[in-house]
Structure formats: C-alpha cells, structure tokens
Image (cartoon, rainbow, N blue to C red; front, side, top):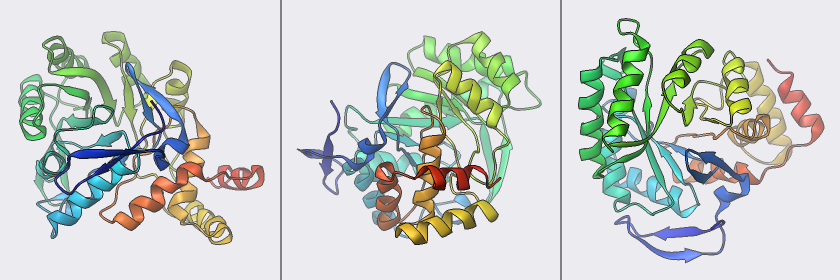
Length: 299
C-alpha cells in the first residue's frame, strides 16, 4: 500500500491519491497489527501558549494537520491534556472522517491546572473518563492506540494499566501504549498486556532512556521519542552538519533518530507548514558514517 499520498481539502476530506508520500521515505514500522510510515506528527504545539487553550489561528492548525496527511504521515499523536481537549478537537475538525491508513493516537493520565502545569492522575476511574472523552472529541467509536501518559506515584501502576486493558476488552481501545516509563515500568506493563508503543523523551541531548529504547528494539515495540531535537551541544553539532548539508538542524536530528533504531518513530510537532515539510523531508536525508559518528558521540 506504500507509498501513497492523500491530497486533503481544507475540510479534511481525502479526495485524491498521488504517487509519492515523503513520509514513506523513512520506511515503516509495525504498530500493533498495522504498518505505519516512520515519520509521525505530534499535535501538542497546535494549541495555545503553554499547551493551554486554543491557538491564535485555528485555520492554520487545520492546514498543518491536513498537510501532514498529504505528506504521507500515518501516525498523529495527541493527548486529552493538550489544551486541554483543544488538540483532539482540532484534529477532528481538520481530518474527520480519517483516512483508513492514518492512526490517531491519544493519551490519558495527565491533568492540567494551567499553562505549563501538568499533574499525573492514573486512577482507573479518571482514565475511563479521559478515554471516553477522547472518543467523543475525536468522533470515533474506538481509539487505535491509547497510551498511559505517565505513571502516577499515588496509584499502583498495575491498576492504571489494568484500566486500559478493561477499555480495550470493551472495544474502546485497540492497542495499549505507555509513556514516560522506565524499564521496570515497561516490564511491568508488558507482564499485564501487550504494549504496542512507548513514548519517552529521547534525542541527541538526552539519551537517558537508552535502556528503554534497547528493550523496545529487542522486542519490536514502536518507540515514539518526544522533543526530538533536544538542546545544547549536540544540537549545535546537528546545526553544523545541517549548515553543511543545506537542511535544518531539526531534520538532521530526526535523521539521526531514524538511523538509531528501526523501531523509532519520530513525532516532531510544529504549528508551521514550512517546518512540517522540513521535518518530513528528513525521512529521505541520508547521513554519512562520519556524520553519524559525530552525532552519536555528541552526548
């Protein structure tokens, strides 16, 4: 089925298929029972400042989402806490009814007290309420990938995962994923149910989740790194290579991630169509052995 490119109207209805999809250049990864292109889109930054409230220009957010699908993106990642609610609502406005090969993944388990404020809530009753709210906002009868946003130190992890298993058994979730976990928590979750994805911070600057990535690589679990560019000296190294290659530093950082493991699915987010196109273009960026060595040594 790859590659294919849905050209999407501004109402979000796919109406034309073309012969190429830039996101397909990155190859595919198995996500549950489906293959998806290895460049996704993170929909956190289409909300207002501090990931709070609506964006200043909702039409621009719609265009970014629609353009991502045109470029062959098949995984759009969001959460009920982005806005809160705003990101999911914008996705539905821009893309519903969703193309058959696009997965809208969402998360529950974080609550918001205001801009930049996040607190964990892994109580089973909250996760059920959050999931059912996401079903309504996304206008679907099931969620293809639902991820526990973070462990809650006040709730046994097994209870939080168990709540997602119940929702899956009821047909409200197809696949279960986890986020912001250490290797012990991932092992605990896998002891309860099959885990389709892990979403942890990982980039050139921060490789503290290397052991979790290695577990995912060994077990064939999709790994969705957030904050893929990072900051500091490694980002400066990416910038040096980017300038020499005539591409963005973000593209270099994404290309490094794609090379780092075959299960990595970068989900860079942006509110700009231009930046989106640069990010997706990283799927076809081939770094030399010398450039990879320079980037890999910049930790």
